[in-house]
Amino acid sequence: MKKSKLSLLLVLSLVLSMFLAACSGGDKNEGKDTGKNEGKDKPVTEESKLADKQELNVFESAEIPTMDSVLGTDVMSFTTLNAVNEGMYRLDQDQKVVPAGAEAMPEYNADKTELTVKLRKDAKWSNGDPVTAHDYVYAWQRAIDPKTASEYGPYFMEGKVKNADAIIAKKDKATAEDIKSLGIVAEDDYTLKITLERPIPYIESFITFQLFYPQNQKYVEAQGKDYAKDAAHILYNGPFKMTKWDGPTATEWVLEKNESYHSAKDVTLTKINFNVSKDPQASANAFTAGEVDITPKLGQAAIISQFEGSKELIQYQEPSLFWIKMNEKNKALKNINIRKAIALSIDKQALVDDVLANGSIAADFLVPKGFAFLDGKDFREGTKPYLAMNKEEAKKLWEKGLSELGVKELALNYVGGDTETSKVSDSFIKNQLETNLPGLKLTIQPVPFKIRIDREQKMDYDLLFTGWGPDYADPMTFMDLMLTGGDHNKMDYSSAEYDKLVRAAQTDLAAKDEERWKALQDAEKILIEDDAAIAPVYQRTVNLLINEKVQGFAHHAFGPDYSYQWIKILK
Image (tube, rainbow, N blue to C red):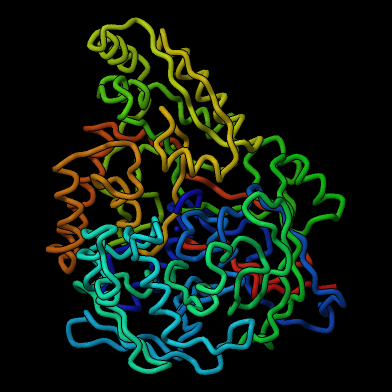
């Protein structure tokens, strides 16, 4: 997912152990909270009684682009949806997949291509309607319907959910009967049957994703184009309900406890107030003043150093990768020597050590470290760094590329973020590129998150700084992003060999662990080392300030960033 969330495992016990490993890397502190607030409940004793007011104040660094679960593509939308809605399953505080709207884990047929899910009968929408199997069928069908223009629907279901490929291929010519052929049916009001094209090793983590949440057909269709435009035009079935949100440009929103939630007795918070703060120092100052309980992710060393040693500074490495996309619609960027020169000319170690200085690590890869494991071995083991900085080689390739293009200079636009952290890191990258590549003129265009997503979708950029966090528990969540013509490619990259390897890992090699692993590693090498389709920059380490009185905060390795439903505020 755009930023924002592991191992080829065939049995649940290994999947669960991998989820835990996904929060950690090779260093003993990677993926672990270095503060004392570890996000897990501790007994509320006489010495730590609950505060009278269970109201939480949170700062975020970006607005919410959408609250329509079939249209979301970003971590802000998914994290908020995770708070106010829920699907069949969710991640708990230990990163385990557990029943949410379902009564129990799925039952499988012999070859694991059919899942039967029994839904709980006490789940309700905020308007009082029961949440039924038909709501799931409707949402999945709406997501795959070309008329909906969901980005994630086709991306997630293609090659996985029965008949999704045929529906996608028909595009706007897909009929209502075609849509109904999708491999999900309601056997009765509280029983779902999901049919897959083939077994999927990571299926249980896969269906926790927000795309697969239910939607109330009667309500959605009654709202028409107004559905999910603001808080008043959405139904909720999760731990909280949204009582204030004026749409994608809103810089504040409010969640309140959903009393009709089936497990409302287990939710202690009564209200969460969110405000957007794009200035990290302002966020830190507000935290110090007691105006906010949880800050946005803080990326600047000068700010983090102010809280060094504090129990309220929480740090963990997350499996989120950031890179520069190079739009090959631009003739100059179609030239492989130009792309390689750009990728080789950035001192990523200096960026993470001297500019970010927040624990993030330089990335010469796409699949993150400490994220994907096979038989206990990290996906990164056995691979080498791809396109590590080499200024001399970069200059040679740059001059060769310019010669091939018949020019001496090149002007490119670079679309970045509008937060202070983004501006600082983008300025560093601009300096590196213009210094190391003579004749390059780079124009930085800082834009809000939603606009950056829109520019990416429209391929309205030359270079674009983007990031991705895993959506489910497998390396494929990164590796299928760059398939030819894919909904997340959006840079005109195409490689028959890359496609072949990734498709093989999705199909013929799906049950052949080691061969599948090797195919994905080979594909990654082609993408980065051979083709320089992207320029990886860094893997993020998160730094948050969390009030010591906040207990039960949970952060996740994939899908939504956080869960708020287990939070309690102590006196």
